[in-house]
Image (cartoon, rainbow, N blue to C red; front, side, top):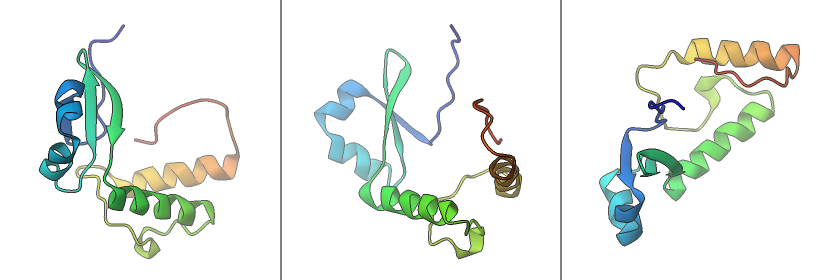
Length: 106
């Protein structure tokens, strides 16, 4: 078992604190996603409704084949991530069809 875990967002909180006041956690994250952990392991992610709607719109545009990032009405960012590399990798995978393997585009 690995002792490191990749966290896919900038904010984390223990599940006990999140249960006590979920609205306070969302306000403190200022619209960003929150990783909620238990026993030092991320159990789930929480996103505000507005961010979830942006993510859904992004996925819908990508599924329709309109994956040009300039045309997608989303405002979320991935600081320090090369989006051109990720989208190129995704396009190649879509073109080549499913491989039944999980791998990251990063």
